[in-house]
Image (cartoon, rainbow, N blue to C red):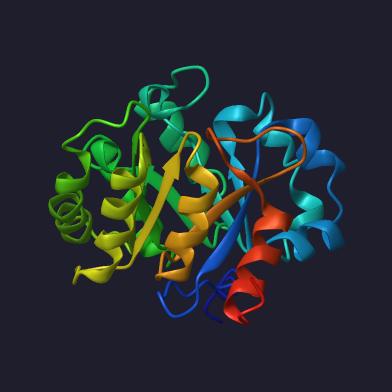
Amino acid sequence: MQAPVSAPPVSRPQVILSPAQPRVVGSFGNAESLAATTYQQALTACDLLEIRLDLLETPETRPWAHLTSIPMLFTARRGDEGGKGDLSAARRSELLEAVLEEASVVDVELESAGEMAGILEKAATAGVPWVASWHDFEGRADSFGKIPAMAQRAAANGAACFKAAIRLHGMDDLAKLASLLTGTHPLPLSLMGMGPLAPVSRLLCAQHGSVLNYGYIGDAPTAPGQWSAALFKEALAASATGLM
């Protein structure tokens, strides 16, 4: 009797997270922007797409299907870190599990690593790296000093990258954020500011090795002070060639 033939492995675009190659992530703030964006527009604007499952009313319809040849980072954000609807850990896990075959990367908050360990194990088995994220929308003074320890926790939990977004209140905060990228960490960092200083902080951090650098596609930023992804990609390219 002939043995059953195994299904071929799912082919998905691979993403290498390296400080030597900062990537621009295009994030959609609403379903309308996602549906209206063409493949060519997305390809021009960014290196990979962030699909915010918590922002989509009917993610099961796969409104990103026309863009699947571009690497995709799927996120189902928890409510206290900027997610819509305050979805439970079980629901966020369910949403992520449904897209693992399409995901190049998934994002799960560092604080959710314990309660979402099941989906992280499934992602690891499927060969999908995860970004451990953390957000401080208030900009607390002690946040910068916490980042090295959180990066250690992220690495211990199997993350491929640690992402931190912090509201900045002044130039001292901007300097503290950028200086973190000059240190030694157990995994790549993705750092960015929010608020009035967000645009300059995001470009500065990308120039200093932040591996994932977020902008928006469409008409709805997904964080305070976020660049348009297309404009950010142009600015980053110009800075790399010394034209800025």
